[in-house]
Image (tube, rainbow, N blue to C red; front, side, top):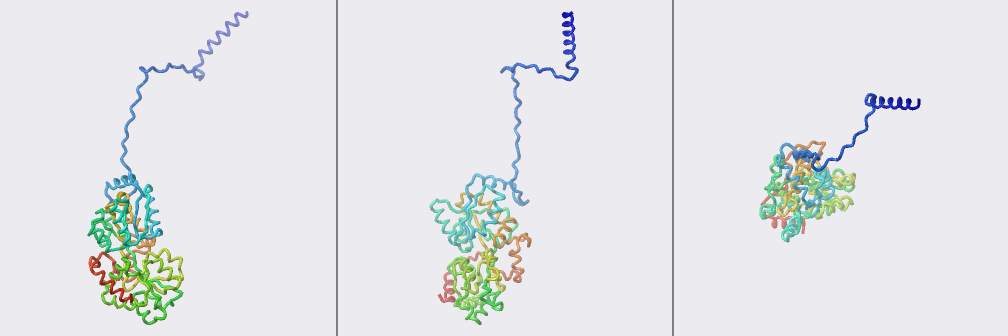
Amino acid sequence: MRRSLIHVFAAMAIVLLSLTPLIGCSPAPTAEPPPTEESAPTPAATPTIVEEPTKSVAYPDYYPAEYEQIVEASKAEGPLLVYSVMAESNWKPVIDAFHELYPWIEVQTLDLGGSEVFERYYAESASGAQTADLSITADPSGWIEFVKNRGEAVDYESPEKSQLPEWSMPFPGLYTVTTDPMLILYNELVLPEDLRPRGMTELAEMAAANPDVFDGKITTYDIIIPFSFAINWAFVRDSGEEAWDLLETLGPMTMPEQSGGTQLQKLASGEYAVGYFVSSGVFPRLPDLEGIVGWSYIEDGTPVFLRGMAIPKASTNINSAKLMLDFCLSHDGQVAWGEGGLTPYRSDLTAEEAPRTFESIAQEIGGEDKMILVNYDENAAAGRDAFVERWNEAFLR
């Protein structure tokens, strides 16, 4: 009987094993021998994917297709060194916006005097030392010497050229960064409202009639500064002997200074009552002096300084310099210069983007004929000595 039961259970096991695939249980996997070197499958070749280079920045339609080559070449360059006459506060919005486009380019700026931008470059380039990759300064005579006489500027044609007025590009490779008006500033705590001038003629009349208020309390830039010489030259060039009459009235009462910062400090303290031909580069500091220092455009003729910009031939980071130059001239670059306290001049800027532009100033003072462009007059160099001598005589020096 026991042997019969064993036979029965064995038969049932065979039946169950034969039904296993039918009730959803998977059979145990069968191990396969590893492939030999001869039998191993040959891996499929990895296809080579050639990607078209993508632009890192969305440029306007008027930029050439090969502009991306300049961008790529800049990635192998060192820090961009800029010699300029602008303060850190003027530069900050520009550099911040530039870094958004080209984050790999480190920008180093040196705030130098107008002629020092050239003198330092000449000395460094002559000795083979590293020097400026981009130069920006307000010295028309210096630019004439640099570009025309010495041929030191790279003849770079910016893609922004078609968007700019002709007068902003006086020589090949030389461009205008901003168009900054000269101002009249006055101390509101010292001068009553009826003695706050809005023009040179008005200032001269007020000073002559009120010497007790104005004598020794007027300031302007010293003629020894190239920046000041250029302003005074343009003022006299456009207004003739009438301009000399005004300067000869104001000169004996005026204390010239060599720095806009010094002028503003002494105006705020009350040491000076009024300053004329003061650079609008002081705009970023005026909100802190609200109620103390007031200002006005010069309504009978506002000198407007053209800040020149070029790439020197000794530049060692020339691709980065081209990118910065183009950005300074671009729509967004001009907006950034306005945020930094300087005056953009592109005609495609809205009032919201730049409340103060070359066009808006012209409208405010009665037209572009009231704007005295401090530009590149090649007669200035030849007439400099005689002009400075007469200016010094007018200022009793």
